[in-house]
Length: 232
Length: 232
DNA sequence: ATAATTCCTTTTGTAGGACATAATGGGGGC
DNA sequence: GCCCCCATTATGTCCTACAAAAGGAATTAT
Image (cartoon, rainbow over all chains, first blue to last red):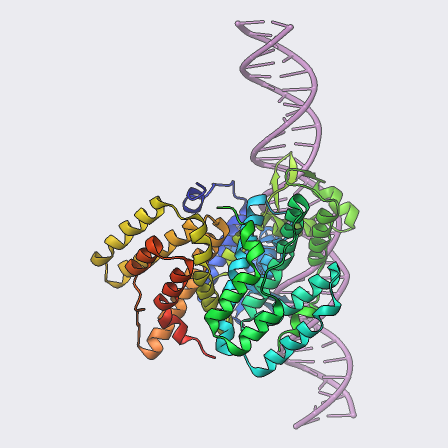
């Protein structure tokens, strides 16, 4: 279906800024700059490309937003390590995304939850378990809606932190608002807000005694209501 | 550790362009525009914000890159549906990323592979299986390096397509180059390039006769050499 | 009267110049 | 030799002007 759109690009009328942006990106790649290297000045780039400094600045502004370059007055610009998720963050607004994308992200978050098991069993420590037990201990006090969500975030957030994978954790955190948004919508439509048979407390118990397969099965059961929502 | 960096932002010296960008984003959110709505003209925005059109244009250029807005001459600008992965694509260059991020992405890709099972068993069709069998049938002819990679991509790509989740599929496709890059590096270092005990052919067999748990176990075995690389 | 064409208006895209600002590196003073 | 101050310089911001494209209006032909 939309498979084609990945192979052949929609051919949008590109402006000078677009061209300069891609030329700059290509230039950075070709010269194999490493983070920290100094880049030519704006005026030099403009002259070399045969465009006005204005256009160059618009293109640079984009790269700057992505964190690919850092600029400081007088020093000029230096290549930086882009924050890959920073750009995602700006765009991940439930209100801006289409229905299909929202559905995709909902599923993606479930996939990420299921994938926790392998990494967690590779890196969990007794201290981590203690923190988790602390979190579930406070669960009983927090049954109302705002507290429940807060608790969800604390628990699952800790799990992600235990993977020792920052990117993974941040990515999941960014997906959460979209997830909650879709959930709220679905609940408004069909009314049910079931909760899985396996609780947070059960999951912690599995972490202490079971293996990664057990944990994954437990997580699947914990998330079952969400999986049941998925359409074939 | 870098947990703090998510709660309190590094306070970078923001330029007018940065401010305008965030103001615009906030404005779009607050007015709850829907895709297709017309936005004020550049000059009006500049006047309202008390900055030059130049600054506004730099900010708009960023939003345009993210696909949040579309502009056509005379018509003005309209809100568009951002392509959430488009921005990621621009930044996901193995040469630009730090070592930690590369490692994170390597792991993330493994997590995504493990998560295939649930969605695939929800949506696979007999036709999909037939295509997969076709792909593995050609496996024998392609053992040399470039062909092997191509075959890997064909097989795993088809699996992702079977999830019916476009975002998931594109995301994985983007991660692949990074994955291969890390792999090449690791192999250069320690020389071994093992392959899992479970082959593609085995996986297809499981798809035909087993359940999602079987498939997941099979995938884990298939990816075992990669998992073994992970450090605790 | 309707349809097609042409012209006009409007808004974005690009150019070029000017000046403020801040940080750096060197020169001068102690 | 160390510290402070200043000139230099690259970026940040503003302004003006004009080209180009695309809608809309007006005009003409059928």
